[in-house]
Amino acid sequence: MKKSLLGLLLAVALVVPAFAAKGDMSINGKIGLGVSNNLNSGNNNVGSSMSLGMPFSIGAEFFYGLMDNLSVGLGVDYGFKSKFEANGTFMGYPMSVEAEGRTTNIYLAVKPEAKLDSKIFSSMYLLGQIGLSSIEYKSTSTLSSSSDSGTADMGIYLGFGAGVTIKDNFIVEFIISSSNGTTNQDGEDVDMQYTAATINLGYKFSL
Image (cartoon, rainbow, N blue to C red; front, side):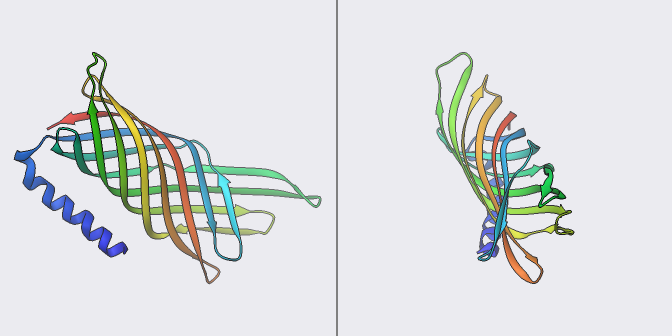
């Protein structure tokens, strides 16, 4: 499944430029702020969920217009480190737990768009994204004297959202996404999921 999806991503990256003369093209540069980020991990035996901080992300997308109201594209997104910290006591003993995570996603995107008759808002659109994800993580606990870090095996990335284009070039959008992967901890496979709700601001460069 992962190899097939990666092959599809590479095929689109190679084929799309061949249609350059047949449709509108653009490159979007984005910076995002995560307003709700969670790192979940576990298997059939035990699981955990941590609400992380509000990280920044940067991304870029290439879009090709199949028609006036529908574009397809290829994008990449890098999320900076997001942290979780907790301090307290457990049965009278001091306890400290720290965790952090970051993601890199590459994806195919489809964007249905509606043009607007407005002096400010040029269009509004929906976004669907599917691709591959890599999760980097680190966790430490003084309660169990444990520490773990690494990069989860590449998994599936899914994203969905909506946005508006302002004055033909400026972008504001809201994306809900899920990055997935698998890692090995103490000889057991552990599923990892990084979910995020992100507000993106960007600029559209028409080609």
